[in-house]
Length: 277
Image (tube, rainbow, N blue to C red):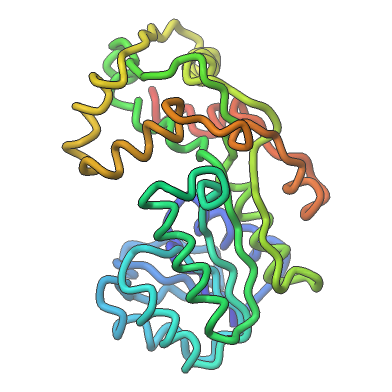
């Protein structure tokens, strides 16, 4: 049994589809609302909430390999439950900021979860992706409303990754040998700025989408209400305010692990165009 947590999210849903398409099973997906979850045929939807770690225990019965999205509850309690369930292998989604911005609070939290996993004695694989292409969904309201998209650090180009590429690496790590004890830094195939992302979305929509760069102070004021002060500062540092050259590097990890080139941002924009219409 393979258990995918965050099963209705950007990575988890893509992972379930990949596993099913390749005949891997049995499959189980953990979601907070199993009644509304739509999984591939044969996939079992199990309800659980990481905020209540005890609710996750039934989903772990018989599980051999686990795809884990962390920092949604008490990771120490969750990993202990996973260990007690005798799960053999955990694929953990962390963040590339663990190595590029270790001084930031969220990066330190991710590193702590990585260490907790290693201390369980279970086999592990750690994925450290960079900025997600799906972060562009934050512009949905502006683009649908035909308003100007406003973002800071308009010319900072990051190698944004398609969430499905993270899923592809996870699928290989869970189903093929040679990936236990490995940590993979994951990026997209090319650097792309916020301005270029908006241009790509405009291209697939077939219409102009106006864009304007705003200051860090303006962006911070908008983000604090959603993320809180520390997280807002961290996001702004990573996206342009405190760019480590290592964060800008394009890595070929996706192609090396999966045998398929990483997907460009324009592909993600094309696949998700309806969200912006």
